[in-house]
Image (cartoon, rainbow, N blue to C red):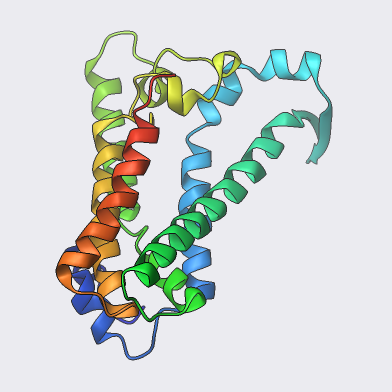
Length: 223
């Protein structure tokens, strides 16, 4: 994208309209993978807490580090790769759903081009993840006995299911910060739908609203 991040986040239609060229699919893919990598990195405290248990019950990967060898539980890199793949599938699934609804509502865009717009609509996480880091730092500094794992993922454990669905931490899908990120992303979708599919404001808001509301219901569903 050859427009400022501020314009993209605040005035998405103008950002998508003002681009010299349409958004790049490859760059959108890179953005989604980088953001997914940041999210996966926040799982490190959970992995540390379950390192011995995972090493005892599962396969390990031996890594040479200088003159030492470290046994890494295979489940950890497997989960990281799975997280990256799931993020890409979420992007393409959201893009496909928005595209189908847009075409049913009179849209004229093509899926590959539209998917790039949707990929760039993940940009709010470039703001939200730094906010998570700041809030986590404040909580760790001001809350007695607070741990990074507890601040990010609540009291849930990996044995109980996906930790970002069962805790009360900042990286829980139901946290105010991640809920705000999803709503913000839905706002960017309205600009993408107007530019890529030529929809009116009302129709773009309706299409984006349906998909955003569905994702919110899934994220906030009882576990």
